[in-house]
Length: 72
Image 1 (cartoon, rainbow, N blue to C red):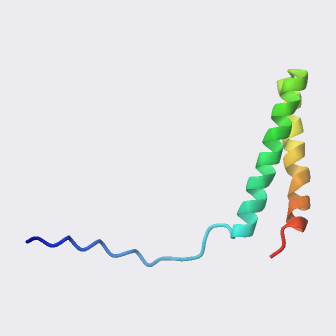
Image 2: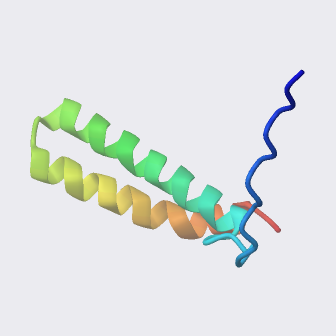
């Protein structure tokens, strides 16, 4: 009978994540809001530059709002 090989050791480095979970959720949700507002603006006007600006404004305006809504 053969035995399964032992897995390689897990490297022990810095175990802290790059971003805290709360920050990642806020930024991901803000990016989603910005993308939706940009796409809807593009569908309604057909203007690409205006849609990009609307998406960026939606992203920027939703970050402080989501930061206040999502508690630790």
